[in-house]
Image (cartoon, rainbow, N blue to C red; front, side):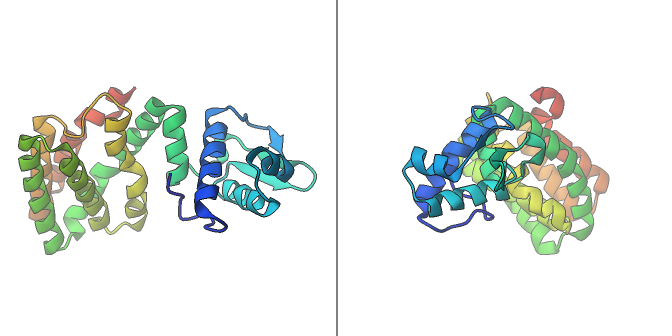
Length: 236
């Protein structure tokens, strides 16, 4: 698993990655429960690593909000309310622990954010961005007809990322890597494929055209059609 940008890269990144992936998965899944404590010596013994590496592991987990370290208590596992749930590593661990719940939460977040972003993008998108959205929407229609799911997913991710960027709301744009996990997750962990139904595919083109035409109502409607098969009620 690729570490989030917050995670220290030294020492030996592959080793650190593997240990973090193990501990992160165990904490998020409850194998190591909230309130449990362990020490640097425990980490050193279990994983046969130096205290230096153990300290880096502890710091990485602390930065992600999974643990809190203190001299008196040691390393204490924190409740889920403290986790950085938007971090890519934490999202990955939550996928492993409870894929359906993670997909549901990301889908609900996406359904809440994207229609609003589409309306705002209608006002702020540059001409080149609107043209790029239309070109990608046209490509997705063709890729869907060909059944090219891999290329469709890659284009779909770029399409929705550009809408969030075109909103000129930096907080929306910053959410893109997290909420667009719903597109990948529905394939990896859900029961749906990368290519949605025909109505949703065509709605991508309608959405791009609405943004290009400065039609906020059309952009909102089309955005909701695009996401109809991942709406919160369908993910419950």
